[in-house]
Image 1: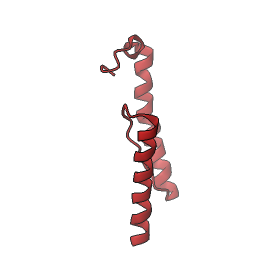
Image 2: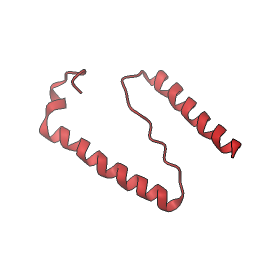
Image 3: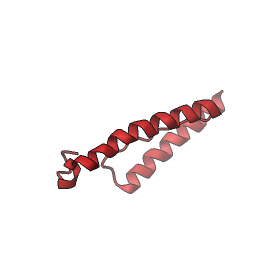
Length: 70
């Protein structure tokens, strides 16, 4: 957040959204556990869309490779 140095990043209401994300992630984890669905959390960074797509592709390919080995 500090790297971007945007004024709205320090707004109190904006910051509350990050607290809400924690609850949503926990609810998602619980749902996936109950339904037997694997949850893949994709880390966010300042990558370009293309770099992010390549990272996600690699992550998913790794998961598929793991499943084939089992």
